Image (spheres, rainbow, N blue to C red):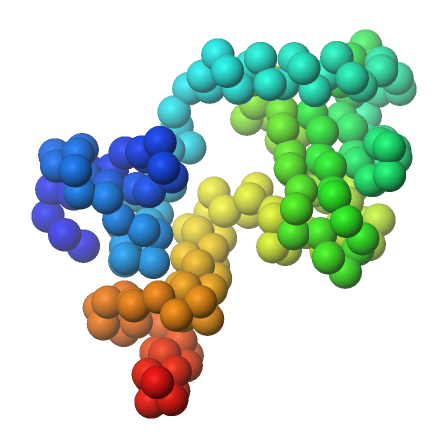
Length: 187
């Protein structure tokens, strides 16, 4: 890991050094340790008021109902809703697409109820209903192994899209290093 490399997330989504604000890096340019450090710092940040407003807008479109997690159809897309003991919506997981192609989805939790396992409950219900949530499930990302898997997936996608991956990053993933070398040989 690079010495004294502190992270911030810039408006364009890149992660970079707080010591050198002009220096921005893509996730595939970070080692797994740097990626984990960046993610952990970003996960600890407080919600912005705009995020709370976004939740309020979503919640206003969800009627009160039975407590717990429920499966519902929203227009044409499936969604899972978590309601508190009084039946008030506190979290939602929505898929846009069919079971085989659900890359476009979102999960949102009322900011005042975060870190209580609501997102995990929603993902568990979706998995139990047969939805493949591996590509979007960020609840597992909080563990070191989950973050490493997420970083591995990012590196793999970067290789597939033709990005240049630094050799010290490839050294962490021998399976991807071979794939990258094959790609470079074909070019």
